[in-house]
Amino acid sequence: MGKSLISTVFITLVAVLIIAGTFFYSDYLSNRIAQKEFRQMQEWVTAQQMIAKADSTDDLSLQMVIIAEQKSIPVIEADEQDSITNYMNLDSQIVVNNPAYLKNQLIKFKNDNHVIITYLDSDGLKYNKYYYGESTLLKQIRYFPILQLFVVILFISILLVAIQYRHKTEKERLWTGLAKETAHQLGTPISALSGWIAMLRETDQKEMLLTEMDKDINRLELITERFSLIGSRPKKMPTDMGVLVGRTIDYIRKRAATKIDLQLGKQPEQPVVIDVAAPLIEWVIENLLKNALDAMEEGTGQIRVDLFTTSIQLVIDITDNGKGISMVDQEHIFRPGFSTKKRGWGLGLTLSKRIIEENHGGQLIIKSSEIGKGTTFRIVLIK
Image 1 (tube, rainbow, N blue to C red):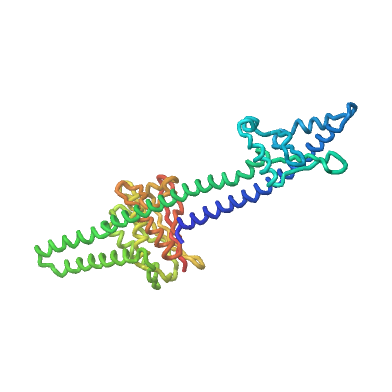
Image 2 (image 1 turned 135 degrees about the vertical axis):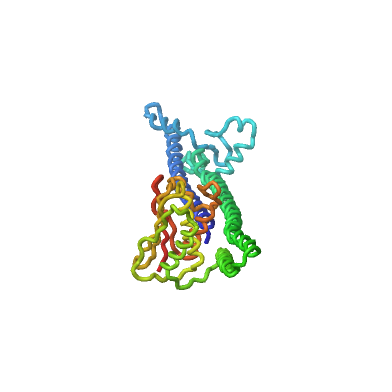
């Protein structure tokens, strides 16, 4: 499963959890407020009754406070036949402009079963009905999850578009870099072959030239094999890692400046044989050694390759004393298209990380780096 797909699934899951949590909590909160408003309406109706039945000596201060504080819940008062006798907390301007407004509101409140009945006589034949609706606060709480749903959907949509755009950009950089890397890899042996052919026409030492041409043809075959393994499941064979690393160091040493000290440092006492795709692992080590060479200022410096093992791992450290990598660049160093070189294509480390981590289940990291002192890349492979 790709990283972009994992990100998409994770973001979608988080969004669903947020929306579900908001709906449940809003429903709980709205039910609590609805119960509170029902009790508030009961108190208000009771206060109305007490005021209607009171005489001049009764203390009605509490009832007056209850009635005065009821400014949020819309109420329609009606008689036994649902003829409207009074209303409160409804827009008076709309009532004046729309004669059917009050009747429509009464029907709505009635359908919602929001009614309190007070009897005016002992026979229960005369009574008032108080139909009431929801306060503005309660309505906002009920509709808030819907608003939040739209906001979350908008946010997730923007985020997913950004992820897809980034993924598309990285793929384009990868293909561009791969094409340039292919041309670069093929360029050296092809140029060499052209030189050998020119020399063949001018010399009689054909045996020596044919030997060198054979080396370049073998190099072309190796390059072809490496690129053919990218994107496929490479076949792994038991490989002596000490021999592989030593062979790669020798190849790079012949092509490095004479002032570069390239050494094979610590090694396990016993051969370490593990199942790897040898052409790809050689390519990774070549890339890391070439990066180390590029990090040397004025073509001088030291590069050291150390191998050591644990009970389950082989660790390869490639250390140089070059210019180092800044903390900012370390965050992007394995990203396709990113390069600190003036003529770099930003693909070598990307492919190396893919080979180690995706093809071999290992790890490629920057173990340490300090500006002006050097860098250590670490390869970890499972034994």
